[in-house]
Length: 359
Image (cartoon, rainbow, N blue to C red; front, side, top):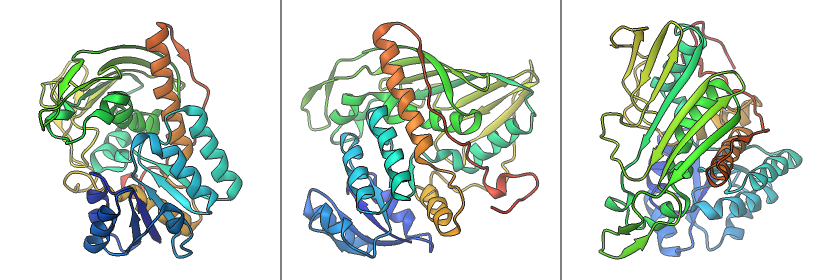
C-alpha cells in the first residue's frame, strides 16, 4: 500500500525507518509546513516532497495518509484526507474533542474509507501475552488495574516542550495504557479524576523559560463496562525510572500480572499467585526490541487489502478521546462523568492465540 506522511517532526523519523522494514508498505512522499524538512525526509526515506497538503491529497497513487502532525492539527488533517478519498492512520489523539473524533469516524463510514488511530502498543509481544493470560482466565476475574505513567520532564530532552504542556500528560502519554486496557476490557462507562500542576515554571534546554498551561499531574479512577476498575496516575514530573516505573498491574481473584512497560514490545512480564512472589513469564513469541512504530500500519493496510476488520480503529481511538475529555471535565467539576461511546474489541494477533486462527 502506498502511503504519504504529513508532518515531519520528531516522531516521523522512527515511523519512516520502521515503515521501510515492511514490504507491505511503500512511502510515496512527505509534506511538512517546513519544505526543507519534507525534502530531507524524502531524500533519506524515498518518495517525493509535496509542495502542499492539497498536492499530496490529489496524488492518485497515494492510498493512505499517515498523519504525524502536532496535536491541534490532527482533526483538520484527518478530515481533509478523508474528504479527498484517502484512508487515514493518525497519531494520537485522533482529535482534541470527542465531537470532532466522532465526526471523523462518521465521515470515514460515509465515504467507505478506513480510519485508524494510535496508540498501537497493545499489539506488542509482551502486551499480547498479558492480554492472553487475562482472556484465558489465568488470573481469575480481574477486578483492579493499576496504571503508572511517570513520564518525567519533557523539557529535559525535547527541544520544543511547550505543546506537550499545553495539553498535559493524559493526552500525550496517558493514552497508551488507556488504549491497551480498553483493547482488553472494552469501553469505560464512568470515571472520576483529580488534576493539579506540580511545577508551573519550566525551562527549555536552550535556557528559555516557559509556563505550564495544562495540569501536569492526574489521578483517574475508571470503571469499565465489563466490571474491572482502574487507577491511572499520569504526570510530567516524576521520572519513568522511579520504582513504580511506567507499567500496568492486573489484579484478579487468583493472582496478579505485572507488565513493566505498556510501551515496549519486549517488556518484562511477571505473574504471582495471590499473596506470593512474582516470577517471570515467557512471552508467546520472542519480542522485538522497543517498539515497531509501523506495526499498526501494517495491520491496517493488510486489513484493507484483505477486507477484514482492522485491530486499530477510529472507533477505538474516538473512545479514548472521550475518556480524555471526560477526565478533564471531571477534574474541573469534581464530579464523576458517564461515557457513552463504544467500539468492537480488537482481535488478538494470530500468534498470540493458544489455538492459531486465520483472519
